[in-house]
Length: 104
Image 1 (cartoon, rainbow, N blue to C red):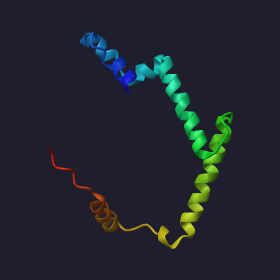
Image 2: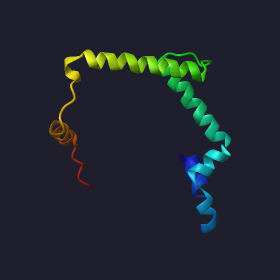
Image 3: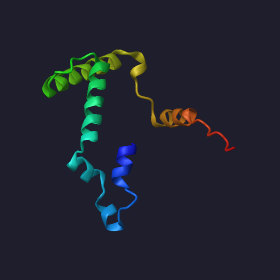
């Protein structure tokens, strides 16, 4: 985040220059540190799935689709897969709220 913040908000940049400093422009310029971060993330995701690093995009999509279908089938066959009605969903959201710690 430090690199991104330095790119988006350099201390010596004019207001006109800062308007040009957008995430879209950052991705279009694709500095080396950003490429390196994306490569590291790609490797970590592939490792998390247990897939080889040299796998192609098409095979990744095929595997993700297969996983999605397997999980969907598992949810459909499970008795707990029935969707709760909106009242149940809202009450469960309230139940999950965690109070913020008091300052100090």
